[in-house]
Image (cartoon, rainbow, N blue to C red):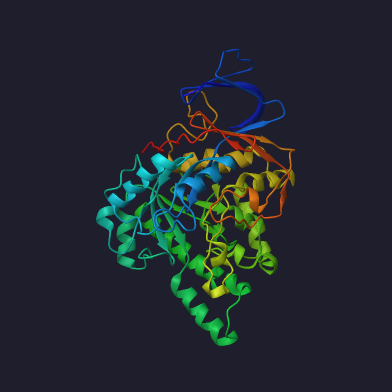
Length: 443
């Protein structure tokens, strides 16, 4: 693996912003110093650029196997790397659902060949596969995913005894999608009776605050009862924030939470323009929810920011509301969206790094990643804060070839992405297809 010398970088790491050189060798950060004059295979002159730890996205749907007409690991990992995300954790609602150890390992084998980014995959839980779930190796798998709301195939876990057994017996992190299915079904029946045809503006009312809170609070109740390590994904309502704490160190938290880019960027006023292209589960909700979610991120009630990157085809998303699937591609533009928020003084660069790299590493007990430290894996992204970038269909790398940000001009650009010491992306071009590494966990 080539050695890399980064000169005069403005480093953002562990609450500090400072200028230094970095020397990367054999896939790790070998030296950080005011001035390094080692010979290297490649030198990056980083004057005017900021260097951040690569983003670690703890929730993506790359659709492989079984749904590769929408996305696949090759395309989506390249989109991630072009956007400064160096590591991802992928969800089990592929086809077939990842409900056995054999199917889980098959996904790792695909990624070992095709993923440009570092990777991990969640083991899926269902109403009847606890024996398989309990065989999961906590040191080699990011977590167990429980859908406490509808999902693809046989992944809705709605049996109370099964849920209790999962929360009681699984010794590793459990990540949950929390929406109460019974509440959603009642709302659908009610809205059809009142209005006949369902439309996109009804989405946050059907998949309502009540549906989210009822499910999230139940998950927290179970976690407290059994001492479970619980991580609730994509919090979307202000009401749910009160379920979490902010006054203890993250490393000591047993119950943590994630916010997603779309819930921080969009609100229900945006359905008029974006329609189904911002249809997600949980739904994008009110401006107040959007505002309070960002405050909760900054105040420490919500611990990490991720994407829930979940592509569908343009044809699927342009169907009538009730037929259009939920989800959309976000991983390529997540960092740029957050950097726009930095420009708008909604958060700082150190806060961005804390929520997208440091805290994700802490939550998942990642081994030697998530920080710019000597001896750590060289997962880095270099950004030009003042180089605009407009999203066009021609520069969208996700296989689905659309983005909810299409037409938007971001204020910042990603110039280089380094994955486990491999300079994978530079100034709009991929340098090679060397695969990333499997993530490991210190548990």
